[in-house]
Image (cartoon, rainbow, N blue to C red; front, side):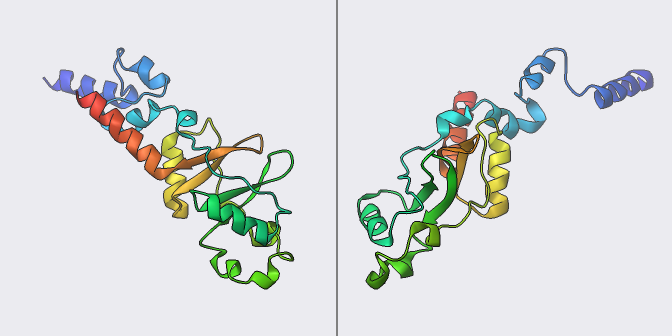
Length: 172
């Protein structure tokens, strides 16, 4: 029994996965001990990207931005240049005071109001890494870019809702 137990522990130390689960782990699907990582690895990050955020340009005036705010359903706006490269973000919460200063509607530009994104997500980043970035920066949404080009936003609520669906699917 001592020899069997010792060999099991030594084998488990050097090779934690069985021959049946090793191929799944190599594909990014983690089993048993790291269930969260495995469930998140089964989700496709690009399919979760929300692209219904209205992009604005740095040369947009505050007056034009107010009109965009009136018709938008989101309170976050990516700032992109003519080539669709992400250059910043405008949040309704951060520019709320400027919105009521109608004297500056023609002299204040989005480039004056925008802030750089706290972090960006690449389409090939894992959702676990994305959630870690969101937690680290206390962000509920992060922009997704490929080669600097804006693709959309990943929302924490979307990731967690899909994680929950995947968990329920696995339980069934």
